[in-house]
Image 1 (tube, rainbow, N blue to C red):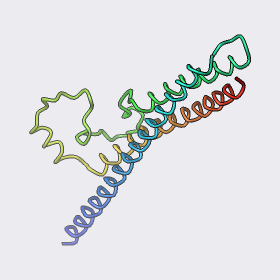
Image 2: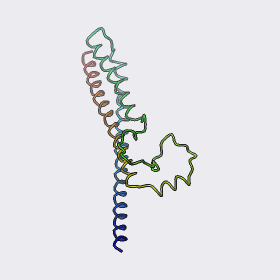
Image 3: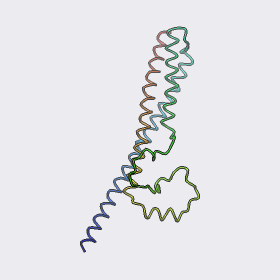
Image 4: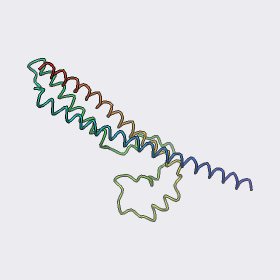
Length: 175
């Protein structure tokens, strides 16, 4: 009788932990969406700066003000690349997650290369047999990797936009 109770307690704990991890997973996704919005706004701001640099900055290597225009142009274009790197995923981050002996079923978020005509009964069977606490922990780790990568590129883009904005303002004051 006590084994049944302890088994029920363990099942309840697993269910509780899986629920908490599911909420963490949702929070991670919201943070990633917020970072994407910030990157998009920064991309739009960079477009405005680039237009000003091209129309009014006269970038060239022949004068001090022209060199400042080149700095503004270069940093704005570099910021575009950083924003693009932040917004568009390049690969599946599962390779960066330390798995140990765990082998994910990847039933929650199947790989992008998965066949859309997958065997549905097999997927249902996999979902029923999945250790959800481990699966959620794995997905949280993947999202943390994505979040950190996006934030890193957003921060670099922000610094570059600040440099280009400062250089553009300086160039316009000199002119």
